[in-house]
Length: 334
Image (cartoon, rainbow, N blue to C red; front, top):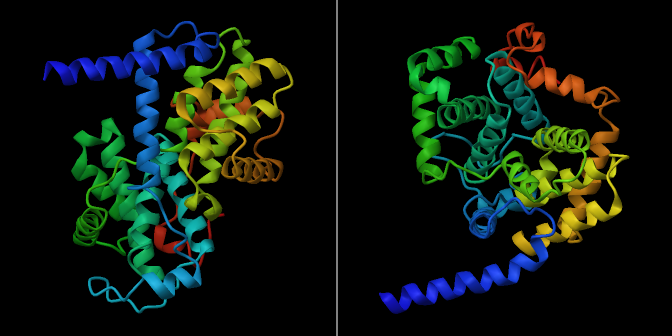
Protein backbone atom coordinates (compact mmCIF):
# COMPACT_ATOMS: atom_id res chain seq x y z
CA UNK A 1 0.00 0.00 0.00
CA UNK A 2 2.81 2.41 0.92
CA UNK A 3 4.60 1.60 -2.35
CA UNK A 4 1.47 2.31 -4.39
CA UNK A 5 0.84 5.55 -2.49
CA UNK A 6 4.43 6.63 -3.11
CA UNK A 7 4.06 5.77 -6.78
CA UNK A 8 0.88 7.84 -7.08
CA UNK A 9 2.59 10.78 -5.36
CA UNK A 10 5.52 10.55 -7.78
CA UNK A 11 3.14 10.46 -10.76
CA UNK A 12 1.26 13.50 -9.46
CA UNK A 13 4.48 15.44 -8.90
CA UNK A 14 5.64 14.52 -12.39
CA UNK A 15 2.41 15.87 -13.88
CA UNK A 16 2.69 19.04 -11.77
CA UNK A 17 6.25 19.63 -12.91
CA UNK A 18 5.13 19.13 -16.51
CA UNK A 19 2.12 21.42 -16.31
CA UNK A 20 3.43 24.20 -14.10
CA UNK A 21 6.01 25.79 -16.43
CA UNK A 22 3.44 26.25 -19.20
CA UNK A 23 0.56 27.24 -16.96
CA UNK A 24 1.88 29.41 -14.17
CA UNK A 25 2.47 32.43 -16.39
CA UNK A 26 -1.21 32.47 -17.32
CA UNK A 27 -2.90 32.31 -13.92
CA UNK A 28 -0.69 32.67 -10.89
CA UNK A 29 -3.63 32.62 -8.47
CA UNK A 30 -4.07 28.85 -8.74
CA UNK A 31 -2.04 26.62 -6.47
CA UNK A 32 -0.26 23.54 -7.72
CA UNK A 33 -2.97 21.27 -6.30
CA UNK A 34 -5.76 23.39 -7.78
CA UNK A 35 -4.09 23.18 -11.15
CA UNK A 36 -3.77 19.41 -11.11
CA UNK A 37 -7.34 19.09 -9.82
CA UNK A 38 -8.49 21.11 -12.82
CA UNK A 39 -6.52 18.84 -15.16
CA UNK A 40 -8.05 15.78 -13.49
CA UNK A 41 -11.58 17.20 -13.87
CA UNK A 42 -11.02 17.72 -17.57
CA UNK A 43 -9.60 14.22 -17.95
CA UNK A 44 -12.76 12.75 -16.40
CA UNK A 45 -15.02 15.02 -18.43
CA UNK A 46 -13.29 14.12 -21.69
CA UNK A 47 -13.66 10.41 -20.97
CA UNK A 48 -17.35 10.94 -20.30
CA UNK A 49 -18.03 12.92 -23.46
CA UNK A 50 -16.22 10.35 -25.60
CA UNK A 51 -17.96 7.33 -24.05
CA UNK A 52 -20.98 7.49 -21.74
CA UNK A 53 -22.44 10.76 -23.02
CA UNK A 54 -21.48 10.47 -26.68
CA UNK A 55 -24.44 10.81 -29.05
CA UNK A 56 -24.47 9.22 -32.53
CA UNK A 57 -26.03 10.83 -35.60
CA UNK A 58 -29.38 9.25 -34.75
CA UNK A 59 -31.40 11.20 -37.33
CA UNK A 60 -29.39 9.92 -40.28
CA UNK A 61 -31.23 7.32 -42.41
CA UNK A 62 -28.24 4.97 -42.24
CA UNK A 63 -28.21 5.01 -38.43
CA UNK A 64 -31.97 4.49 -38.22
CA UNK A 65 -31.81 1.55 -40.62
CA UNK A 66 -28.88 -0.19 -38.97
CA UNK A 67 -29.19 0.60 -35.27
CA UNK A 68 -32.77 1.31 -34.29
CA UNK A 69 -35.46 -1.30 -33.94
CA UNK A 70 -39.17 -1.00 -33.12
CA UNK A 71 -39.79 -0.16 -29.47
CA UNK A 72 -42.06 -2.61 -27.71
CA UNK A 73 -42.43 -0.29 -24.72
CA UNK A 74 -43.41 2.68 -26.87
CA UNK A 75 -45.32 0.76 -29.55
CA UNK A 76 -43.73 2.72 -32.38
CA UNK A 77 -42.79 1.60 -35.91
CA UNK A 78 -39.25 1.12 -37.09
CA UNK A 79 -39.18 4.32 -39.13
CA UNK A 80 -38.87 7.37 -36.88
CA UNK A 81 -40.79 10.47 -37.89
CA UNK A 82 -38.91 12.74 -35.48
CA UNK A 83 -36.82 15.25 -37.42
CA UNK A 84 -34.53 18.21 -36.85
CA UNK A 85 -37.39 20.71 -37.04
CA UNK A 86 -39.31 19.02 -34.24
CA UNK A 87 -36.16 18.93 -32.13
CA UNK A 88 -35.62 22.67 -32.62
CA UNK A 89 -39.20 23.36 -31.58
CA UNK A 90 -38.76 21.29 -28.42
CA UNK A 91 -35.55 23.17 -27.57
CA UNK A 92 -37.24 26.56 -28.02
CA UNK A 93 -40.20 25.43 -25.95
CA UNK A 94 -37.82 24.22 -23.21
CA UNK A 95 -36.06 27.60 -23.08
CA UNK A 96 -39.42 29.35 -22.75
CA UNK A 97 -40.35 27.07 -19.87
CA UNK A 98 -37.13 27.63 -17.90
CA UNK A 99 -37.36 31.38 -18.48
CA UNK A 100 -40.98 31.41 -17.36
CA UNK A 101 -40.18 29.40 -14.22
CA UNK A 102 -37.05 31.47 -13.54
CA UNK A 103 -34.64 28.55 -13.90
CA UNK A 104 -31.05 28.24 -15.10
CA UNK A 105 -30.88 27.96 -18.89
CA UNK A 106 -28.14 25.33 -18.56
CA UNK A 107 -30.95 22.99 -17.48
CA UNK A 108 -32.02 22.85 -21.13
CA UNK A 109 -28.59 21.51 -22.12
CA UNK A 110 -28.99 18.68 -19.61
CA UNK A 111 -32.53 18.03 -20.82
CA UNK A 112 -31.51 17.77 -24.48
CA UNK A 113 -28.66 15.43 -23.60
CA UNK A 114 -31.23 13.08 -22.08
CA UNK A 115 -33.58 13.60 -25.03
CA UNK A 116 -30.94 12.98 -27.73
CA UNK A 117 -29.43 9.91 -26.07
CA UNK A 118 -32.87 8.40 -25.50
CA UNK A 119 -33.85 8.92 -29.15
CA UNK A 120 -30.59 7.36 -30.28
CA UNK A 121 -31.90 4.12 -28.76
CA UNK A 122 -35.69 4.28 -29.23
CA UNK A 123 -37.66 5.11 -32.35
CA UNK A 124 -40.62 7.33 -31.51
CA UNK A 125 -43.39 9.24 -33.24
CA UNK A 126 -44.09 12.92 -32.70
CA UNK A 127 -46.55 12.37 -29.88
CA UNK A 128 -44.08 10.26 -27.91
CA UNK A 129 -41.26 12.69 -28.76
CA UNK A 130 -43.28 15.44 -27.11
CA UNK A 131 -43.62 13.34 -23.97
CA UNK A 132 -39.89 12.52 -24.04
CA UNK A 133 -39.06 16.22 -24.43
CA UNK A 134 -41.34 17.26 -21.58
CA UNK A 135 -40.16 14.47 -19.29
CA UNK A 136 -36.48 15.11 -20.08
CA UNK A 137 -36.91 18.72 -19.00
CA UNK A 138 -38.82 17.64 -15.90
CA UNK A 139 -36.02 15.24 -15.00
CA UNK A 140 -33.31 17.83 -15.72
CA UNK A 141 -35.04 20.30 -13.41
CA UNK A 142 -35.18 17.69 -10.65
CA UNK A 143 -31.47 17.03 -11.09
CA UNK A 144 -30.13 20.57 -11.33
CA UNK A 145 -32.57 23.06 -9.82
CA UNK A 146 -32.07 22.99 -6.04
CA UNK A 147 -35.03 25.25 -5.35
CA UNK A 148 -37.44 22.82 -7.01
CA UNK A 149 -36.16 19.70 -5.27
CA UNK A 150 -38.34 20.59 -2.30
CA UNK A 151 -41.39 21.14 -4.50
CA UNK A 152 -41.68 17.89 -6.44
CA UNK A 153 -45.52 17.60 -6.35
CA UNK A 154 -45.83 21.25 -7.44
CA UNK A 155 -43.24 20.73 -10.16
CA UNK A 156 -45.09 17.72 -11.56
CA UNK A 157 -48.36 19.64 -11.58
CA UNK A 158 -46.64 22.46 -13.47
CA UNK A 159 -45.54 20.07 -16.20
CA UNK A 160 -48.98 18.47 -16.44
CA UNK A 161 -50.39 21.97 -16.92
CA UNK A 162 -47.73 22.75 -19.54
CA UNK A 163 -48.90 19.71 -21.50
CA UNK A 164 -52.45 21.15 -21.44
CA UNK A 165 -53.48 17.89 -19.74
CA UNK A 166 -52.49 15.87 -22.81
CA UNK A 167 -50.18 13.91 -20.52
CA UNK A 168 -50.99 12.67 -17.04
CA UNK A 169 -48.78 12.27 -14.01
CA UNK A 170 -48.67 8.57 -14.78
CA UNK A 171 -47.44 9.31 -18.33
CA UNK A 172 -44.63 11.56 -17.10
CA UNK A 173 -43.53 9.34 -14.22
CA UNK A 174 -43.63 6.28 -16.47
CA UNK A 175 -41.53 7.98 -19.15
CA UNK A 176 -39.12 9.20 -16.47
CA UNK A 177 -38.54 5.60 -15.36
CA UNK A 178 -38.01 4.51 -18.97
CA UNK A 179 -35.51 7.30 -19.65
CA UNK A 180 -33.56 6.46 -16.50
CA UNK A 181 -33.40 2.76 -17.27
CA UNK A 182 -32.57 3.34 -20.94
CA UNK A 183 -29.71 5.70 -20.07
CA UNK A 184 -28.63 3.49 -17.15
CA UNK A 185 -28.97 6.46 -14.80
CA UNK A 186 -26.23 8.41 -16.60
CA UNK A 187 -28.00 11.72 -16.16
CA UNK A 188 -25.23 14.16 -15.27
CA UNK A 189 -23.70 15.07 -18.64
CA UNK A 190 -20.96 17.67 -18.98
CA UNK A 191 -22.54 20.74 -20.57
CA UNK A 192 -20.87 23.34 -22.78
CA UNK A 193 -21.77 25.98 -20.22
CA UNK A 194 -19.99 24.16 -17.38
CA UNK A 195 -16.95 23.54 -19.57
CA UNK A 196 -16.79 27.24 -20.45
CA UNK A 197 -16.75 28.16 -16.76
CA UNK A 198 -13.89 25.74 -16.10
CA UNK A 199 -11.92 26.90 -19.13
CA UNK A 200 -12.21 30.49 -17.94
CA UNK A 201 -10.24 29.55 -14.82
CA UNK A 202 -7.25 29.57 -17.16
CA UNK A 203 -8.01 32.97 -18.66
CA UNK A 204 -5.24 35.56 -18.05
CA UNK A 205 -6.15 37.54 -14.96
CA UNK A 206 -4.60 40.80 -16.11
CA UNK A 207 -7.10 41.11 -18.96
CA UNK A 208 -9.56 43.96 -18.53
CA UNK A 209 -12.58 42.67 -16.53
CA UNK A 210 -15.01 44.26 -19.00
CA UNK A 211 -13.35 42.36 -21.85
CA UNK A 212 -13.50 39.11 -19.88
CA UNK A 213 -17.18 39.68 -19.12
CA UNK A 214 -17.94 40.40 -22.76
CA UNK A 215 -16.17 37.24 -23.94
CA UNK A 216 -17.98 35.22 -21.27
CA UNK A 217 -21.34 36.63 -22.44
CA UNK A 218 -20.55 35.74 -26.05
CA UNK A 219 -19.52 32.21 -25.12
CA UNK A 220 -22.49 31.56 -22.83
CA UNK A 221 -24.97 32.83 -25.40
CA UNK A 222 -23.40 30.70 -28.14
CA UNK A 223 -23.38 27.54 -26.02
CA UNK A 224 -27.10 28.07 -25.37
CA UNK A 225 -27.67 28.63 -29.07
CA UNK A 226 -25.72 25.48 -29.95
CA UNK A 227 -28.34 23.35 -28.17
CA UNK A 228 -30.81 24.30 -30.90
CA UNK A 229 -28.62 23.03 -33.74
CA UNK A 230 -28.55 19.30 -34.45
CA UNK A 231 -25.02 19.70 -35.91
CA UNK A 232 -23.64 20.03 -32.38
CA UNK A 233 -25.36 16.91 -31.03
CA UNK A 234 -22.56 14.67 -32.32
CA UNK A 235 -19.75 17.05 -31.27
CA UNK A 236 -17.92 16.96 -27.96
CA UNK A 237 -19.02 19.48 -25.36
CA UNK A 238 -15.40 20.52 -24.80
CA UNK A 239 -15.02 21.36 -28.50
CA UNK A 240 -18.23 23.41 -28.46
CA UNK A 241 -17.18 25.28 -25.31
CA UNK A 242 -13.70 26.14 -26.54
CA UNK A 243 -15.05 27.14 -29.96
CA UNK A 244 -17.57 29.45 -28.27
CA UNK A 245 -14.77 31.13 -26.33
CA UNK A 246 -12.71 31.49 -29.49
CA UNK A 247 -15.62 33.21 -31.25
CA UNK A 248 -15.99 35.46 -28.22
CA UNK A 249 -12.31 36.35 -28.27
CA UNK A 250 -12.36 36.93 -32.03
CA UNK A 251 -15.26 39.36 -31.64
CA UNK A 252 -13.69 41.26 -28.77
CA UNK A 253 -11.70 44.24 -30.10
CA UNK A 254 -9.64 44.74 -26.94
CA UNK A 255 -8.13 41.29 -26.30
CA UNK A 256 -4.51 41.21 -27.40
CA UNK A 257 -3.22 38.43 -29.70
CA UNK A 258 -0.67 37.55 -27.02
CA UNK A 259 -3.34 36.98 -24.35
CA UNK A 260 -5.41 34.95 -26.82
CA UNK A 261 -2.44 32.74 -27.65
CA UNK A 262 -1.48 32.39 -23.99
CA UNK A 263 -4.96 31.23 -23.06
CA UNK A 264 -5.26 28.69 -25.87
CA UNK A 265 -1.82 27.26 -25.12
CA UNK A 266 -2.70 26.92 -21.44
CA UNK A 267 -5.91 25.10 -22.40
CA UNK A 268 -3.94 22.72 -24.60
CA UNK A 269 -1.37 21.97 -21.93
CA UNK A 270 -3.82 21.44 -19.07
CA UNK A 271 -6.80 19.86 -20.84
CA UNK A 272 -5.25 18.41 -24.06
CA UNK A 273 -8.00 20.21 -26.03
CA UNK A 274 -6.35 21.55 -29.18
CA UNK A 275 -7.86 24.76 -30.53
CA UNK A 276 -6.51 23.86 -33.97
CA UNK A 277 -8.26 20.50 -34.15
CA UNK A 278 -10.72 19.90 -36.98
CA UNK A 279 -13.71 19.49 -34.65
CA UNK A 280 -13.03 22.72 -32.74
CA UNK A 281 -12.60 24.57 -36.04
CA UNK A 282 -15.88 23.14 -37.40
CA UNK A 283 -17.66 24.17 -34.22
CA UNK A 284 -16.12 27.63 -34.39
CA UNK A 285 -17.25 28.15 -37.98
CA UNK A 286 -20.80 27.00 -37.25
CA UNK A 287 -21.04 29.10 -34.08
CA UNK A 288 -19.78 32.14 -35.97
CA UNK A 289 -22.47 31.58 -38.61
CA UNK A 290 -25.09 31.28 -35.87
CA UNK A 291 -23.79 34.48 -34.33
CA UNK A 292 -23.83 36.33 -37.66
CA UNK A 293 -27.42 35.25 -38.25
CA UNK A 294 -28.62 36.15 -34.78
CA UNK A 295 -30.65 39.32 -34.38
CA UNK A 296 -30.45 39.04 -30.61
CA UNK A 297 -26.69 39.34 -30.27
CA UNK A 298 -26.20 42.89 -31.55
CA UNK A 299 -24.24 45.78 -30.07
CA UNK A 300 -26.20 45.80 -26.81
CA UNK A 301 -26.18 42.02 -26.30
CA UNK A 302 -24.41 42.32 -22.97
CA UNK A 303 -27.26 44.36 -21.49
CA UNK A 304 -29.91 42.10 -23.04
CA UNK A 305 -28.19 38.93 -21.90
CA UNK A 306 -27.64 40.19 -18.37
CA UNK A 307 -31.32 41.12 -18.12
CA UNK A 308 -32.44 37.76 -19.47
CA UNK A 309 -30.38 35.90 -16.87
CA UNK A 310 -30.96 38.20 -13.91
CA UNK A 311 -33.70 36.75 -11.68
CA UNK A 312 -34.67 40.28 -10.61
CA UNK A 313 -34.91 41.71 -14.12
CA UNK A 314 -38.19 42.74 -15.73
CA UNK A 315 -37.40 40.44 -18.66
CA UNK A 316 -38.34 37.36 -16.68
CA UNK A 317 -41.30 38.87 -14.88
CA UNK A 318 -42.83 39.85 -18.21
CA UNK A 319 -42.28 36.46 -19.85
CA UNK A 320 -45.58 35.01 -21.01
CA UNK A 321 -46.66 31.50 -20.16
CA UNK A 322 -45.20 29.02 -22.67
CA UNK A 323 -47.43 27.23 -25.15
CA UNK A 324 -48.15 23.57 -24.43
CA UNK A 325 -45.48 21.16 -25.60
CA UNK A 326 -48.20 19.42 -27.61
CA UNK A 327 -48.90 22.63 -29.46
CA UNK A 328 -45.46 22.98 -30.99
CA UNK A 329 -46.30 20.85 -34.04
CA UNK A 330 -49.31 22.84 -35.22
CA UNK A 331 -48.15 26.12 -33.68
CA UNK A 332 -44.33 26.26 -33.82
CA UNK A 333 -42.69 28.44 -31.25
CA UNK A 334 -39.63 29.40 -33.28
